[in-house]
Image (cartoon, rainbow, N blue to C red; front, side, top):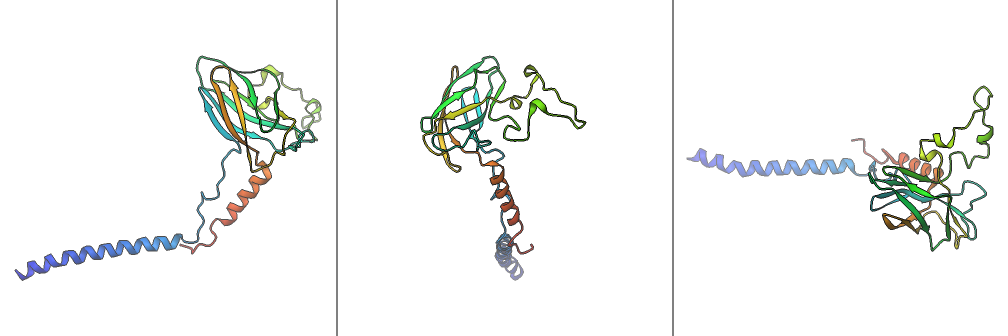
Length: 224
Protein backbone atom coordinates (compact mmCIF):
# COMPACT_ATOMS: atom_id res chain seq x y z
CA UNK A 1 0.00 0.00 0.00
CA UNK A 2 2.83 2.37 0.84
CA UNK A 3 4.56 1.68 -2.49
CA UNK A 4 1.36 2.48 -4.39
CA UNK A 5 1.02 5.83 -2.65
CA UNK A 6 4.62 6.69 -3.45
CA UNK A 7 4.12 5.91 -7.15
CA UNK A 8 0.94 8.02 -7.30
CA UNK A 9 2.61 10.96 -5.58
CA UNK A 10 5.52 10.91 -8.04
CA UNK A 11 3.25 11.58 -11.06
CA UNK A 12 2.52 15.27 -10.23
CA UNK A 13 6.24 15.82 -9.61
CA UNK A 14 7.10 14.27 -13.00
CA UNK A 15 4.52 16.47 -14.78
CA UNK A 16 5.86 19.58 -13.05
CA UNK A 17 9.39 18.67 -14.15
CA UNK A 18 8.30 18.32 -17.79
CA UNK A 19 6.55 21.71 -17.70
CA UNK A 20 9.64 23.35 -16.24
CA UNK A 21 11.85 21.83 -18.94
CA UNK A 22 9.51 23.02 -21.70
CA UNK A 23 9.46 26.54 -20.30
CA UNK A 24 13.26 26.58 -20.13
CA UNK A 25 13.57 25.46 -23.74
CA UNK A 26 11.21 28.23 -24.87
CA UNK A 27 13.27 30.84 -23.02
CA UNK A 28 16.48 29.50 -24.55
CA UNK A 29 15.05 29.76 -28.06
CA UNK A 30 13.87 33.31 -27.39
CA UNK A 31 17.32 34.26 -26.18
CA UNK A 32 18.96 32.86 -29.30
CA UNK A 33 16.75 34.96 -31.57
CA UNK A 34 17.17 38.18 -29.61
CA UNK A 35 19.04 40.87 -31.54
CA UNK A 36 18.89 39.05 -34.87
CA UNK A 37 17.17 40.67 -37.85
CA UNK A 38 14.43 38.70 -39.58
CA UNK A 39 15.19 37.91 -43.20
CA UNK A 40 11.73 39.15 -44.20
CA UNK A 41 11.77 42.35 -42.13
CA UNK A 42 13.43 44.52 -44.79
CA UNK A 43 12.31 42.70 -47.91
CA UNK A 44 10.74 44.84 -50.62
CA UNK A 45 8.24 43.85 -53.27
CA UNK A 46 9.51 42.50 -56.58
CA UNK A 47 7.74 45.37 -58.34
CA UNK A 48 7.45 49.06 -57.50
CA UNK A 49 3.85 49.66 -58.57
CA UNK A 50 0.35 49.06 -57.26
CA UNK A 51 -2.24 46.52 -58.40
CA UNK A 52 -6.01 46.53 -58.96
CA UNK A 53 -8.71 44.38 -60.54
CA UNK A 54 -11.94 45.35 -62.29
CA UNK A 55 -14.08 42.65 -63.82
CA UNK A 56 -11.81 40.46 -65.93
CA UNK A 57 -9.09 43.12 -66.18
CA UNK A 58 -6.04 42.91 -63.92
CA UNK A 59 -3.83 45.98 -63.59
CA UNK A 60 -0.34 45.23 -62.34
CA UNK A 61 2.76 47.28 -61.44
CA UNK A 62 0.94 50.59 -61.93
CA UNK A 63 3.42 53.40 -61.27
CA UNK A 64 4.67 56.79 -62.36
CA UNK A 65 8.19 56.50 -63.70
CA UNK A 66 11.08 58.55 -62.45
CA UNK A 67 12.40 60.89 -65.16
CA UNK A 68 14.43 58.91 -67.67
CA UNK A 69 15.30 61.86 -69.92
CA UNK A 70 15.07 65.64 -70.14
CA UNK A 71 11.63 65.23 -71.69
CA UNK A 72 10.18 64.17 -68.33
CA UNK A 73 10.97 66.09 -65.17
CA UNK A 74 7.95 65.27 -62.94
CA UNK A 75 7.90 68.90 -61.81
CA UNK A 76 4.89 71.22 -61.76
CA UNK A 77 4.09 72.33 -65.29
CA UNK A 78 5.97 69.40 -66.84
CA UNK A 79 4.91 65.89 -67.73
CA UNK A 80 5.35 62.40 -66.33
CA UNK A 81 5.20 58.91 -67.79
CA UNK A 82 2.66 56.36 -66.54
CA UNK A 83 3.58 52.66 -66.61
CA UNK A 84 1.53 49.51 -66.00
CA UNK A 85 0.54 46.10 -67.33
CA UNK A 86 -3.12 45.45 -68.17
CA UNK A 87 -4.15 41.80 -68.50
CA UNK A 88 -7.47 40.65 -69.93
CA UNK A 89 -8.23 37.43 -68.06
CA UNK A 90 -11.43 36.84 -70.03
CA UNK A 91 -11.43 33.90 -72.41
CA UNK A 92 -13.90 35.24 -74.97
CA UNK A 93 -14.52 39.00 -74.69
CA UNK A 94 -12.19 41.77 -75.80
CA UNK A 95 -12.08 45.15 -74.07
CA UNK A 96 -10.85 48.67 -74.72
CA UNK A 97 -9.13 51.12 -72.38
CA UNK A 98 -11.31 54.13 -73.12
CA UNK A 99 -9.52 56.70 -70.97
CA UNK A 100 -7.33 57.34 -67.94
CA UNK A 101 -7.97 60.21 -65.54
CA UNK A 102 -5.58 61.77 -63.03
CA UNK A 103 -7.56 64.76 -61.68
CA UNK A 104 -4.97 65.68 -59.05
CA UNK A 105 -2.11 65.68 -61.55
CA UNK A 106 -3.12 66.71 -65.06
CA UNK A 107 -4.41 65.49 -68.41
CA UNK A 108 -3.59 61.92 -69.45
CA UNK A 109 -2.73 61.32 -73.09
CA UNK A 110 -2.83 57.80 -74.50
CA UNK A 111 -0.73 57.17 -77.59
CA UNK A 112 -3.11 55.15 -79.76
CA UNK A 113 -6.09 52.89 -79.16
CA UNK A 114 -5.64 50.34 -76.39
CA UNK A 115 -7.32 47.04 -77.29
CA UNK A 116 -7.12 44.03 -75.00
CA UNK A 117 -8.00 40.77 -76.69
CA UNK A 118 -9.01 37.72 -74.66
CA UNK A 119 -6.12 36.34 -72.59
CA UNK A 120 -3.82 39.15 -73.73
CA UNK A 121 -1.57 41.74 -72.08
CA UNK A 122 -0.86 45.38 -72.87
CA UNK A 123 2.16 47.11 -71.34
CA UNK A 124 2.61 50.86 -70.95
CA UNK A 125 5.86 52.54 -70.02
CA UNK A 126 9.13 53.45 -71.64
CA UNK A 127 10.92 51.30 -74.16
CA UNK A 128 14.14 49.65 -73.01
CA UNK A 129 17.10 51.92 -73.71
CA UNK A 130 14.92 55.01 -74.21
CA UNK A 131 16.71 56.79 -71.40
CA UNK A 132 20.18 55.79 -72.61
CA UNK A 133 21.74 58.61 -74.60
CA UNK A 134 24.10 56.13 -76.23
CA UNK A 135 21.38 53.85 -77.54
CA UNK A 136 20.31 54.47 -81.14
CA UNK A 137 18.21 51.55 -82.46
CA UNK A 138 18.28 52.91 -86.00
CA UNK A 139 22.08 52.73 -86.10
CA UNK A 140 22.90 49.85 -83.78
CA UNK A 141 25.71 47.46 -84.74
CA UNK A 142 26.46 43.88 -83.84
CA UNK A 143 29.76 42.65 -82.37
CA UNK A 144 31.38 42.76 -85.83
CA UNK A 145 30.32 46.31 -86.66
CA UNK A 146 27.58 45.29 -89.08
CA UNK A 147 24.23 47.11 -88.72
CA UNK A 148 21.46 45.11 -87.06
CA UNK A 149 18.05 45.34 -88.66
CA UNK A 150 15.11 46.01 -86.36
CA UNK A 151 12.38 43.42 -86.17
CA UNK A 152 9.12 44.47 -87.89
CA UNK A 153 6.44 45.73 -85.52
CA UNK A 154 4.13 42.80 -86.30
CA UNK A 155 6.83 40.35 -85.22
CA UNK A 156 7.21 41.77 -81.70
CA UNK A 157 5.74 39.04 -79.50
CA UNK A 158 6.59 40.53 -76.12
CA UNK A 159 4.27 43.49 -75.32
CA UNK A 160 6.94 44.94 -73.03
CA UNK A 161 9.29 45.21 -76.02
CA UNK A 162 7.05 47.86 -77.62
CA UNK A 163 5.16 49.52 -74.76
CA UNK A 164 2.45 52.13 -75.06
CA UNK A 165 3.37 55.71 -74.25
CA UNK A 166 0.95 57.21 -71.74
CA UNK A 167 1.82 60.69 -70.51
CA UNK A 168 0.41 62.87 -67.74
CA UNK A 169 0.84 66.41 -69.08
CA UNK A 170 0.50 69.85 -67.54
CA UNK A 171 1.35 68.62 -64.05
CA UNK A 172 -0.50 70.63 -61.43
CA UNK A 173 2.05 69.77 -58.75
CA UNK A 174 5.47 68.18 -58.32
CA UNK A 175 5.30 64.39 -58.53
CA UNK A 176 7.30 63.19 -55.54
CA UNK A 177 8.70 59.76 -54.75
CA UNK A 178 7.16 58.25 -51.64
CA UNK A 179 3.66 59.59 -52.35
CA UNK A 180 0.71 58.04 -54.20
CA UNK A 181 -1.66 59.74 -56.62
CA UNK A 182 -5.22 58.64 -57.54
CA UNK A 183 -5.56 57.54 -61.15
CA UNK A 184 -8.80 56.25 -62.67
CA UNK A 185 -8.81 53.62 -65.44
CA UNK A 186 -11.97 53.42 -67.58
CA UNK A 187 -12.59 50.23 -69.56
CA UNK A 188 -15.44 49.91 -72.06
CA UNK A 189 -16.66 46.48 -70.96
CA UNK A 190 -15.27 45.91 -67.48
CA UNK A 191 -15.90 49.33 -65.97
CA UNK A 192 -13.84 51.76 -63.90
CA UNK A 193 -11.24 51.27 -61.19
CA UNK A 194 -9.36 53.80 -59.08
CA UNK A 195 -5.71 53.06 -58.33
CA UNK A 196 -3.48 54.88 -55.85
CA UNK A 197 -0.37 55.10 -57.98
CA UNK A 198 3.10 55.40 -56.43
CA UNK A 199 6.19 56.88 -58.02
CA UNK A 200 8.63 54.22 -59.17
CA UNK A 201 11.32 53.77 -56.52
CA UNK A 202 13.96 53.45 -59.22
CA UNK A 203 17.05 51.24 -59.39
CA UNK A 204 19.17 53.33 -57.00
CA UNK A 205 16.60 53.29 -54.17
CA UNK A 206 16.00 49.56 -54.60
CA UNK A 207 19.73 48.92 -54.36
CA UNK A 208 20.01 51.06 -51.21
CA UNK A 209 17.20 49.16 -49.47
CA UNK A 210 18.66 45.81 -50.50
CA UNK A 211 22.14 46.74 -49.32
CA UNK A 212 20.75 47.92 -45.99
CA UNK A 213 18.91 44.64 -45.57
CA UNK A 214 21.98 42.60 -46.39
CA UNK A 215 24.19 44.56 -44.00
CA UNK A 216 21.80 43.73 -41.17
CA UNK A 217 21.67 39.99 -41.81
CA UNK A 218 23.44 38.10 -39.08
CA UNK A 219 24.21 41.32 -37.18
CA UNK A 220 23.65 41.44 -33.44
CA UNK A 221 23.26 37.69 -33.15
CA UNK A 222 24.74 35.56 -30.45
CA UNK A 223 26.03 32.85 -32.75
CA UNK A 224 23.31 30.35 -31.82
